[in-house]
Image 1: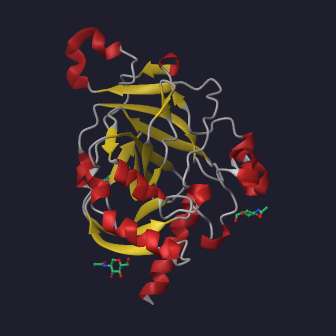
Image 2: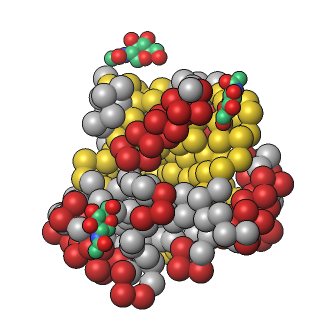
Image 3: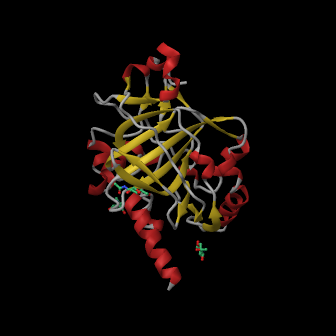
Length: 281
Ligand SMILES: *[C@@H]1O[C@H](CO)[C@@H](O)[C@H](O)[C@H]1NC(C)=O
Ligand SMILES: *[C@@H]1O[C@H](CO)[C@@H](O)[C@H](O)[C@H]1NC(C)=O
Ligand SMILES: *[C@@H]1O[C@H](CO)[C@@H](O)[C@H](O)[C@H]1NC(C)=O
């Protein structure tokens, strides 16, 4: 019974987020005949991937960034929650079973459901692509609203979040070698309080899911401060995936006139002109 419920919840979560509608039916890829430029042809459900006008990821370029003093700080108070490390086949993620915490955007609550990584980064900053990107996927209670907090990574010191799951990432790698492409490993109580750190700068725009069905209306919040991960961790995030998913970043999509709004910590306002800086770093 517990397993059944768990499975149903997991299925609903994956369906809602369209990570991979059914685990063994991922029919898109990042290379070859089902690559990103063909996603829109693979299913009528994927039409937005080719017809959409507000797609993701995008390049965060200073010419498209506008400071918005009306944006609110992105306060988070995530609490340790029971979680499962999941090989989504197209990427590696952590799915939460309980309530981790909410973010509030324009008066609406979005609750953290899962996080996952892309290698290399999907969003670019000033024409530069970083080594990896973390997506914290939040949903409204009715599952219709999606808000993602994204963080970019450079190579450097190990990322404390990934450090906690290194052995389990190895576990997923061995599962994959044994033919289990959609491996799962229970993590027990998983602590992401490290992610509650104050965000001094972020970039907001409305885009889409970066994987089919490329659903639009996703509120993106890209943290200005770049995180670091080690070379070893980068390898661990790729190793459990099939070769066609080891590079799992969708190419850049056109902004089509969209502006990217910038939040800049109000505490630093007194430093004068710095506030109006449009530099990414
Ligand atoms: C690809 O998968 C989607 C979702 O499962 C499905 O709707 C579609 O028919 C599939 N397309 C092909 C060409 O297999
Ligand atoms: C959002 O969630 C917080 C606590 O998590 C709650 O106090 C608040 O009433 C909620 N707001 C809305 C608009 O549902
Ligand atoms: C945590 O989730 C696992 C499944 O991943 C489940 O077997 C276990 O009972 C859960 N533990 C708690 C404390 O809820």
